[in-house]
Image (cartoon, rainbow over all chains, first blue to last red):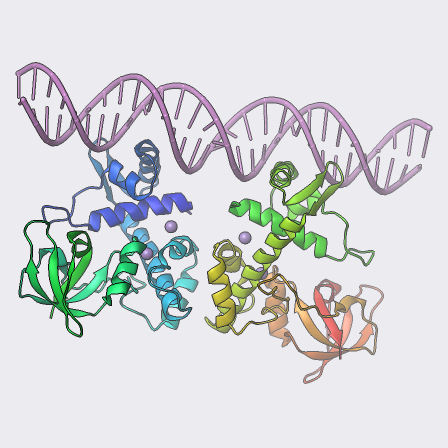
Length: 225
Length: 225
DNA sequence: AATAAAAATTAGATATGTCTAAAATAAGTT
DNA sequence: AACTTATTTTAGACATATCTAATTTTTATT
Ligand SMILES: [Mn+2]
Ligand SMILES: [Mn+2]
Ligand SMILES: [Mn+2]
Ligand SMILES: [Mn+2]
């Protein structure tokens, strides 16, 4: 059994390896500093943890280069993601939480280790494919339903898209979207992108046009349609 | 914020202070050895923890005598009991767990700290007064609905009683009760108590008579009727 | 290529939680 | 009352998780 901290480190590695970098493709290995930032801890602490997780066979550590997950590590990371997103779904769908209020609580609940619990919860919720932020929920075998999405910030004037997913860690962003009436599934058209600051004028299907900063459009994943 | 271990120690103290001893009344203070046994740890480790909890103001420690909870400690202990029993109720009522399968999972879930979560869960479950083992669930103010109960082992031949609560920590007992068709609410009559081994012949209202060892009758709380 | 900056690791410190063994105190028994 | 046993505490050890400061290695820039 891993400790809560070990699990959080493993999950951070997994998340960073998923993330698409500035060059448009996912990183080959996750770096110590990025992991530390994500967990709000220090690089030296992360190094220690990576060595421990490597010794336990969850990841491969190439000093000064980075880490990648082993098959064993990948499996466990997906299980943690599964638990996290199922609990977020439970909190929103059943307990009436706002989508900006669930991440921190799920960050705790994901560490309750019981396969029976996870699978029963999944069934109870009707085996949802996506969590309240639009992120896919791995099934009990770790399989993920993928969507073809891209950042809204990469879209050009005239494109018609639908919001597919939003970063769940920044509750400020979620509240901003609430206030503008934007949510998962909202359809919109990009009117114009301003080169000066990267801001973007958009028009939601049912509503008036307004503009979004690049900070915001960068964190919105959209799909065609 | 307390750690999981600190919370478990506090809860153990609370539970021991509730427990009725051989003399028929609750203890004035909880002893180090009993706490250690309950948490499957060692007396010396418990002493350390008690000193820490005392320093933080959750309990009063009289060396070589024992500990009692402060008002602050009592409040927190009741909150932990509340969370534990609400989650047990959720697991049985909503996820279809057996009453013998929930204790260990709830032992983890009780440490998820979020008042909003606890109170929403309480509402979602319909503000239940008792958990699947018949134990009372403190409300958000810490108030407990009490039943007048006593151990079945103290009953005499001829008494008609109803099962009100069962120790939730021993899953073997719960499975034994399942196999005999005994559950919370089952009405039964005590036919005879055998002085030799303390075993007891009982007859459930809807079923044939059989006998129970003192080990079992000792762990059943019953009420009149 | 040499130098500067960034990232990662190591060394050493502190805090926590647990243990065993030894000493202190309390409770029980002849 | 003296002795024995049980309980509790203390002392000292070890493993974990974190940090700061110093060192090493890699990457970027002149
Ligand atoms: Mn989340
Ligand atoms: Mn977490
Ligand atoms: Mn329980
Ligand atoms: Mn617990």
